Image 1 (cartoon, rainbow, N blue to C red):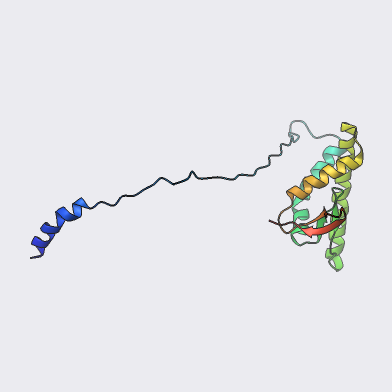
Image 2 (image 1 turned 90 degrees about the horizontal axis):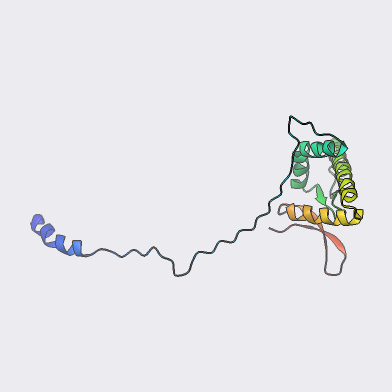
Length: 160
């Protein structure tokens, strides 16, 4: 009995094949926003020379410490391309944060002065360019100093 039922249904089931559409009614859209920064680093064959290269090396070595302070919302990027202390933690960690901030700002200033001299532009222009660059590079949630519609500067956390 079951064998007859299977034989009778087999032609019916074979004739039914579902249609699967793999095309989309509209083309897929991909929105990509990318920034590429190209740096030239000194190779081990030719050691870096000069105070600017040393400042860059020190900044590279302290990069993780600065990011930790930013993630903890202790420091933020100000309108002069430097770091500002937003909320100083008490005790030794607060002293560490201040020392790290001062060292980073000293190296940033040295590099900005070099850039201003090379390009023969006012330091204020370099500061404004660096501040814009650091604001753009900031991660969502980090403190940045921004200019409001009334042209007054204020601190806000970068939105994602």
